[in-house]
Length: 187
Image 1 (cartoon, rainbow, N blue to C red):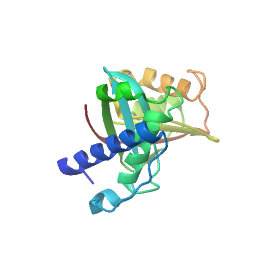
Image 2: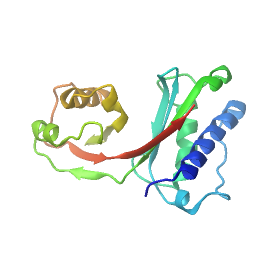
Image 3: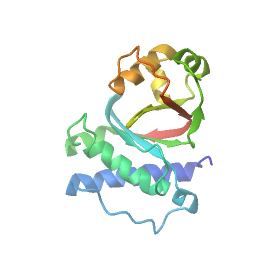
Image 4: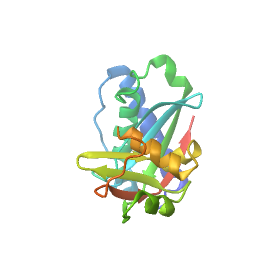
């Protein structure tokens, strides 16, 4: 389901509202979907990415749809601002400079590969978001990461390092999924 302009605008408004309320309370504001478009009430997974001057300021999201898309964006945007462990909570002085980007994920699609070289051949640079899972560990890169890492081997190496694995690590037990995103944002 592609989102239209008004639905994308509504999701960005919801994300900004959760941050604005969070700047006051420092707690996740209660969710209410009283005035939400029916399509935005469907379960979908999303990520919220925050930037200031083109630099990452927070990014949190979900891989599997567990709640309405609108609520998922509400929670993920707040989490990106106040509970991404890589950054301190967003300060009120930063808010005017904040760019909010939302990525709505397609359903995960298994990628059945026997080796890293097979995975590298199946990657679609610029299109695929990738999830690697091994035992209890799970890691993902959104398709937007291809902008910084356009070469498949480097993309995959950085993804493994993000998981805490050596860049050259591979195991036949790694499970791979791909997804695409509909991404949009505003300053």
